[in-house]
Length: 74
Image (tube, rainbow, N blue to C red; front, side):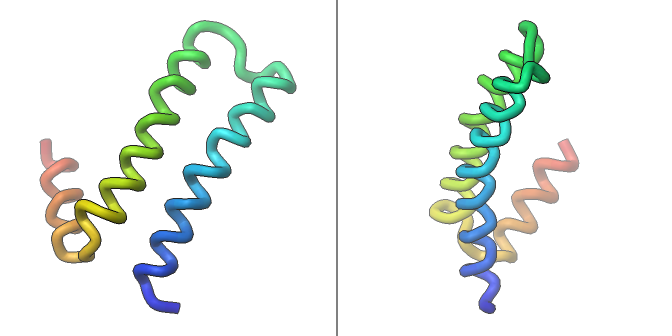
């Protein structure tokens, strides 16, 4: 499969599966307390924004690699 199709599918899976897993763990009682709530509230918007940026703003692999390298070097 071409790389852009795989990357987009993976990002969509992460956005859909992440919140579902968090809800499942919350119902089972594993995610309780203020730290867990803060982690969930901070993680969900980050997943969506990251997927949108990766697909629309930085679609090419060369620019994405430079962006990640700059981000990791900070």
